[in-house]
Image (cartoon, rainbow, N blue to C red; front, side, top):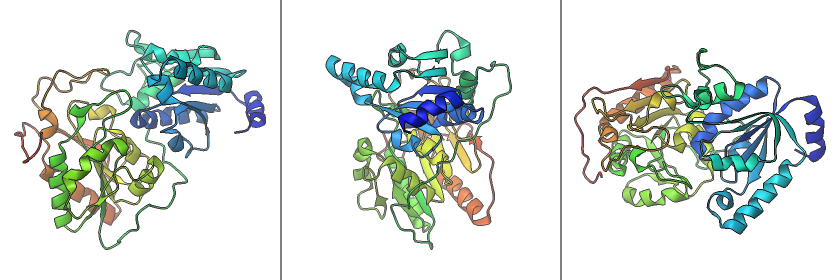
Length: 370
């Protein structure tokens, strides 16, 4: 958006500023809340990191203000100061009706210190009006906070906002075989590594073996930080695109797939803004707050009977060295749900989003899982 257009827009409609740099899953879950504001007549500015900015640019109603996330979060004092000054210059002279910093960490408030706004909000662990309340979907909670609604009101149940303008898939289709995209790593960003959320890679390898035996085309997806998972699939007839695609290309790949399989990680939410069916595995986190609220999405939630589940409190996990809750979900359970989704795709059926809790399922240890 040019400076002239921005000045014109500032007189024509109220503006909202959203601060959400990453990770990709949290950014995607905040998009429907921003869209709810946009539909009420707000122009949307969004301070974003350079990694997720291309995804936000798929939505023409979002004006992306790109920030140097690496410098801001992990740079030295000089690098941080330069990044802050560059962002301040981008925001100079703007006035907002709403400025929403969608983080609990007070350090992020520094990014909008000089921003003028009628209403400034930030996530809070002490004020429930500005907290992502447990048991509720994060998408709806972001919308409640942005729109200033009471937590006693009926949740929005907002679906993901479908991405538009995706490029052609980076991999040609063999229409004789159903395509299943698998994201076996993830659960890691610039600030932390949440390994407890991951389904064991050995389970993904066994899942891949069973899907290939049934005639499916299996494609691996993931970012540069996920390359450690690739060697586990060596020798199998998969197409390994881990660390080879941009985020937008990965979205195009998912769009071309009948089903995407992953655990509670960024690719889950990326899949939610495409047309692919979703089969996902949960354990220490509650899928009721994270499974995309749209058709053809299912979560298998392991750990029924575990006193500690869910153990994630929004900041930390319980001390745990073996995520048995996630490992309760066997490859056979996932294959059964993939088959159900493929049948729905073949018949044109739309299945309601659902969470499946296998009761008192014995721990299934796949050889090589850890």
